[in-house]
Image (cartoon, rainbow, N blue to C red; front, side, top):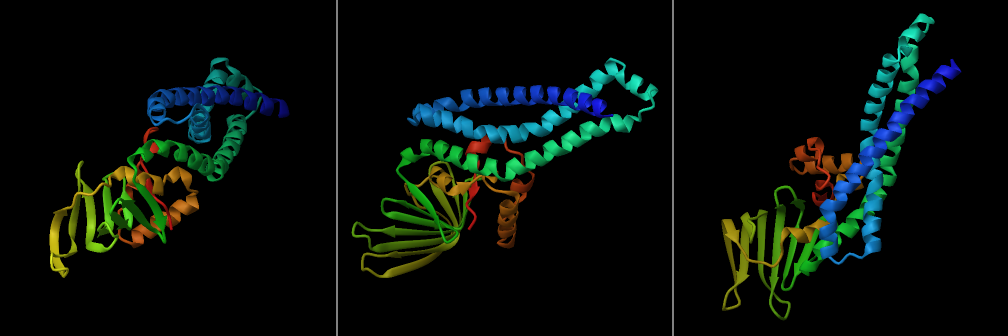
Amino acid sequence: MKILWKYLTKSFLQVFYLALGGFVTIYVVIDLFEKIDDLVEAHVNASNIFLYFLCRIPLIVVEGIPMGILIAAIISLGILGKNNEIVALKASGINLLRCIFPILTVALILSGVDFFFNQTLVPFCMKKANTIWQKKSKKSGQSAAVAQGRIWCRSENVILNADYFDKRNNLLKKVTLFVFDSEFDLIRRLDAREARWSGEDWIFVKGLDQWKNSENNWVITTFNARILPIEVNPVSFETVERLPDEMTYLELYNYVNRLEKEGYDTTCLLYTSPSPRDLSTSRMPSSA
């Protein structure tokens, strides 16, 4: 039985390594041609470009292992059937389930390895890779950061504070905008339920607008929609967000629960499978 176990395991792993290697190679090549221009235009040096693609390999391997297991199981069993080896085993009195058991055992071990790397190595490497990728968005001159669970962004005489940024819809939630004069005195404050990016400006929706008039008195008005040109665009918020791949399952679970308690829609986080490019460009807010 040990000989049979070794033979079936060897046949399975040979196909698995071939399938996984092919998947990783194709993925890296496509990723390279898709992103190399953006990295070069952002003046990212060659060593960081190499490090970026190197750090993405663990994620690619983790995504490729389930597919490799499936392909290896189908092909290895197909080869056994084609060579009439399954018939020979059954004729020898060996149950078919005992033939499949070695493959199921190896598949279970590989699944455990996949889960382990997805919780340890992948978040660390993806954080490194995303840091390099974000360099291409730093040319805007705008800065953003997270403090006490909220997003803060400053651009010249404007400071913008928001609770949540939806990259998919270019939407800011619970926004507060502070406008200062040349002496850094507050001259305007705008609070809005949300702000939508129109492609050129932010459209602030349902809120309170306060500003100083010519007599230095504060004027307060409410509004349903208001456009206020500011030199802040959605790219400014990419550097303060985390991808699901930068989180462990526990971190992602806690993050989704927090958003649901605050009334945000988390459907896209739970059921949407991102494309290879989206893995580097579609992002989520940092957890507090």
